[in-house]
Length: 273
Image (cartoon, rainbow, N blue to C red):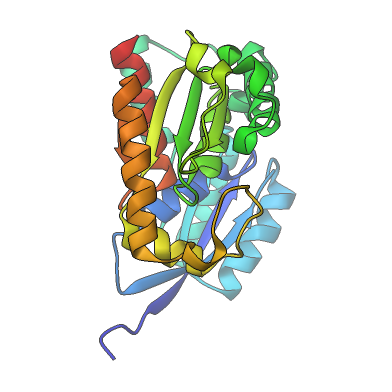
């Protein structure tokens, strides 16, 4: 009974995609171990008619309301209606905007979905994502020197999801599997531009992950030893030795989320400059 969760309704109302709200809501909810949110996401809410339909849904299933609405009139309308319904509401962006305004001066203008404008940064992210998808799992090894980051590691050390996360930050990322006895591509060893990082985890962690996934077709793996902890320990020993030989930094991902691993890599890039 101690692990029983208390469910509550979490209404996320946005004039854009709602991604900011989802991240904020989950970051706070996870701090309340005995509670679990039933998320209701309402993106692209930009006028009173749309907002009224959402508020009717809130009235049917009362809970916490978080919103990111740039238009102050619409935001005020939401606040007033939430008070009438009797539910708490928070404009997630407003305290942040007020802090920025105190430091930087008045806003030039309020723009809905400004973070999604197709500027140079947007196209850089698209280019990075295309590069990363083309260079997943050791593909297209001839142009690793175009990468910003190359991740190396044995199977199931989160190389692909970490690469994609970094690409979404505009960082061109390739990843290469380390297989015992199989030499790494010469193009990687000759590359001067990218930060090359080794990803490792404990043999127990890798064995558990491998046990829940189908065996891939990467050449060189022994299916009978794929989840064997002793075999995995040897793979990790080989991977560590490679990284030590070439002086590549190593990150243990055992207790890290994808976001935390990516943050550590970004910090390494800044440090090594």
